[in-house]
Image 1 (tube, one colour):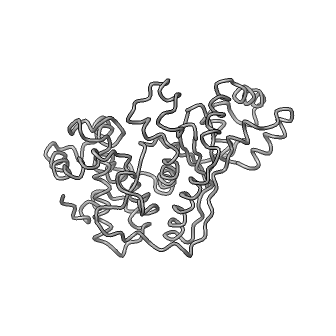
Image 2 (cartoon, helix red, strand yellow):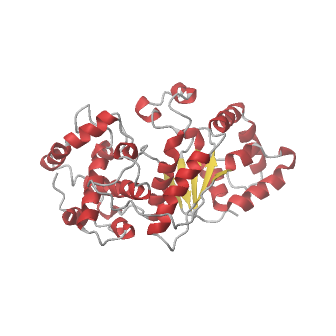
Image 3 (spheres, one colour):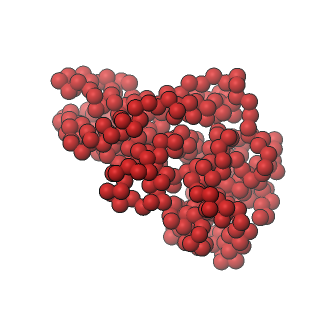
Length: 338
């Protein structure tokens, strides 16, 4: 029987990260004494390269090795049901032997023939994580291929990464599927460590939806981005947000105007789901601003608010900054004034 688990499916606005709203880098800490060694576990290879003549035994081995991750992958990602179901092995065999699925796996396996660079970045990020959370354990990062069904999910101590969502901006599949260019340009291997850390942050700090409005979403996603910046303090702001140079410049040059517009148009406390989506979800540009603005420009502004809050309260730990769930109070204590 499948064990009950709490699953967070991550629908990422492709991201990139940087430190918060000041020139100094208080989060650029010395992690030389912190031990960590993060591996990208290749479930995708274990699955597609299994000995299908002994499939039942192989399934048992996978379940023993990957536990809750395996459950979620089967039920929520590729939708073939629980491993305990009567026809499960037949459905899994169909998935593995589907010609397109195998083609996507082989393409992915070629792109990710080596994961050394990704593992080095993950290790660096989670060394910072252990510095700030010394009593914690980093997650297991497990790679899979799902024919583009799902990019990321978290469950328990796992972060699942769909490598077929990071095959490079020139990948033929993305263009065949008609994925917009503003999303395709972020589907690169270098994005994996950043998105993994963002996903882990959502697991650690779920959204407080007691007062769901534009301000709350801006600041919450700003907190997640600030968290990633704390774990990767050497990454530039533009990378952490996934912006082009022009988009980053636009945000910096128009920060005051963006804030004034949100206030004057009474958008900050709007609970209209459409307004929230237009401001915090990825898009060619932010609908309430000009066509030169990037999608998620309001999230960048949320990040600046969180950065201001952390700067004005320097005794707060990373966990304390992230644990502030009264978003309006965070704004007040930040004294944010672009």
